[in-house]
Length: 279
Image (cartoon, rainbow, N blue to C red; front, side, top):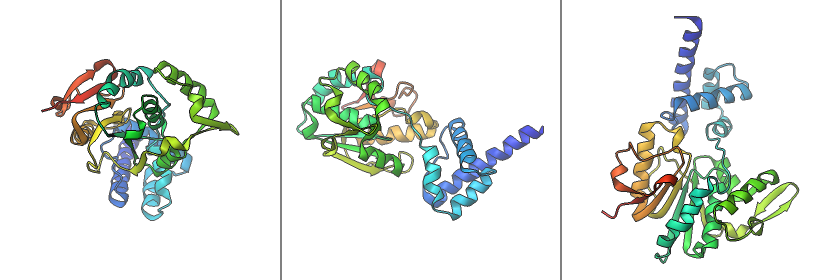
């Protein structure tokens, strides 16, 4: 075995032990996340946090509680934008909303809400379609930092032109500028958008179902999971959805090979929107 291969094997062992320590000590379970993604994020964390190796990082994690939030910032980094993939939101508006109108009250779950871009997109869409007042939105993530950012609803102004263009392409019925105030290089979204939102810590890896939903949107989260965790998350969604409820996934995600696929029908196939079967 060459020296480089031996070094890589040792690194893999260290990473597995680090992830096991993270789960055993704090109950954050990344053990079955896609290893290539986890390894890339952990290497970045090790370099930027100044650890010589992953064993030293594990020792710090076990003995210094302040290390946990620092590490989670790297493991839960997600890049998103408001109305990301506009045709998805256009399909929600044109195809899903007419069905949702038939319910007197609605529950919507944004799983893995990150900094809130998808949450605010859906709240604005529901407001424009006259459904906001009868809807409770559940925004969940495993990262407290992400939840705090989502609850603040503040984004840098340089991101707003893209958000605005996405909103327009998604069939927006107003100007996005109606929903935020700009000052000091930041856009602060109106507090009224959060009046029906519940922010909560929830892990798709370890936590259970917490309510019956009419729409679940979980986009570009499961791409970081291995097949075992993908199946667990899809099982949660199946249990959580009301009969004929809707599930939206990311462009690179699918139900196709999951044992839960039979519980769903394609609703808008090209946008990865599924409907739970009535039976």
